[in-house]
Length: 254
Image: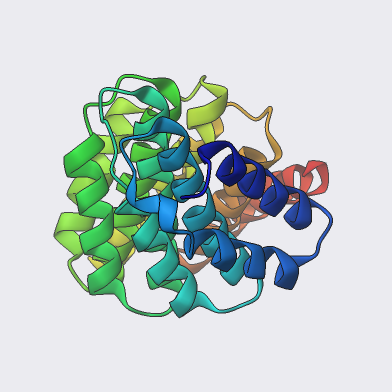
């Protein structure tokens, strides 16, 4: 049986190949590790870590190679790796695997499956108190709301956005980007419900969001651009122009 430390070394080699951009070689290394007979011994901490690392990296590599269906399946396998949910690191690993699986399914236009994965993540890890896993849960909740909207479940999407908007901190650097996305989601739901004036007003709330990170600035700029278009449609061209200028200013800083 393969020594667990050999498995760890193989897992490290996969990461090194990936970092060097040798994606196909890294994928072959994943397959070689996953074919090892020692992986049945998942009670061994090193074996379990190596198994998860190879499965997750395989998902990442397939995703980068544009093989989204295979990537989704690989992330599902990573999520199936035995996990101790009392261990913050293992909680985070499970959250990452499920979140990435959901994103791949969403990109493949398989929204019902994506919704199920996001809801699994939220159900299993929604009460996680470590910041890293909690961030993954928030992202899953935001993505879940977007999927609900895409499925025509507009009232549910609006309710999900309302809850998130009341919980997220606009001053928090990590939460600001997700909050801006939630505000955009909420406005999109209002537009679907033919409440365009409310949607335009709702989008103004993004100005509360912390703008330190480029991702947050990009979401805020997008929200303001959407608000400008709504204001123009509603006949307030002067305010639309001012908001559009603000959006352009933020875009140039991103």
